Length: 149
Image: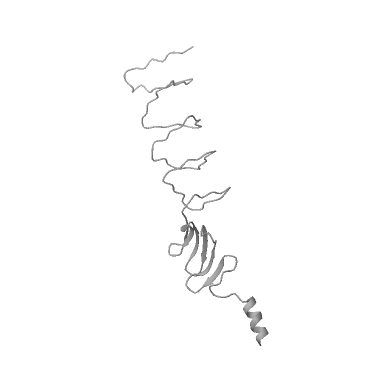
């Protein structure tokens, strides 16, 4: 019997004892942390969290059913099936959209429009070139267009 107890003491996972940074407690469940306290992970029925320097870095918000990140989200590729919202940001590379509305001041260093370009009003501050400009007769005063060589 004593040899069985010795084997059990040697091989059983014990509450509160650390095994390569991992411990199992009744209050927190499975906790994995570093000795220098720079990183910690907590897994239980109420919490799935990763900490960095004592602060939440990544966790699952159970009531909202959402993962929450406190830092930058960095991915090589990905797909968002729902709405993607941002307070601000920068896109580098090519930005494609099937359709959409820009509700602010749209600025660009350059660009090409294919198809009809329509505007309620506007001002061109630079040179405007076109092979043909048609102004309906209702515009007054009459406009004279001359060819530039």
